[in-house]
Amino acid sequence: MEPDDPKADALVDAVVGRIAHNLDRIAAEKGWSLRKVSRVTGVNSQSIHNIRNGKANPTVRTIVLLAEGLGVDVLDLLREASDAGEG
Image (spheres, helix red, strand yellow):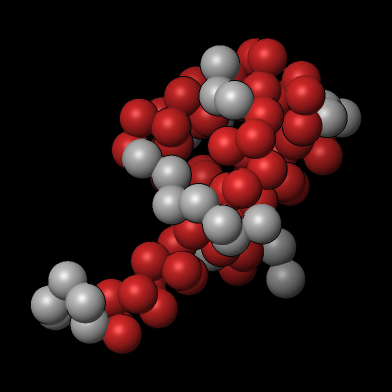
């Protein structure tokens, strides 16, 4: 794929969507607000908000910080809903 390939853009959007979905799901399971996720992970709340709304493409570092702070494996943030045990 070329860097400006629409297929690459669609794939990136899908992965970021998975991260946002799983971030919301894991935070909800823990009963954590966006502010608490930010405080525990060290990721700025505006960055988390932008990830959750598909307005930001998180760096690998951000994904690692989120996973570490949430107490999950990085792959848990990347899994599709069906892979995470959801219907």
